[in-house]
Length: 196
Image (cartoon, rainbow, N blue to C red; front, side):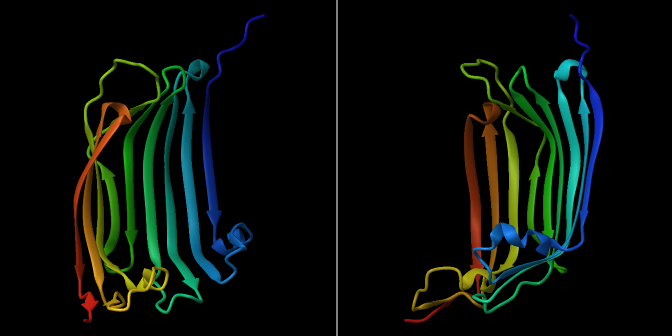
């Protein structure tokens, strides 16, 4: 009995105008309120016999707000965008990432950015001698308002974070299909108040 090769072309879309529908998932934290609108699109292409599965998609969240009674400062609405392109080869146990970009904007700044310098191949094969070129993943934080998380952190009597801003740059170098990762970066906190 012969089986026909499996292949396909699928579009997956979702549009949600009220993120509070997820409230039951975090009911334990009843004082947390999440609002915003979400759009999700992914194009899936399955090659003959599932030798390769390609996913090309994006996630777009508009006016995302997270409010909590324990936070004295409430965040500005965020626009979050994620774009990705993945190629999965099940038999070879590899995932090729040709695009991965993340941006979060608070209306005036891109407070979070994340991007790959070039295509990345992750290998999940045991005891392979195959070599992959190093790839850099760059992550940036720009003028993040520490007041948004200050009430969630342990209290230090002499330190006040509420008026401070954090900026950071992190460069991760991924070696040999993800078997080794090296990171180097910087952290800058301005207007941190310390009282003796």
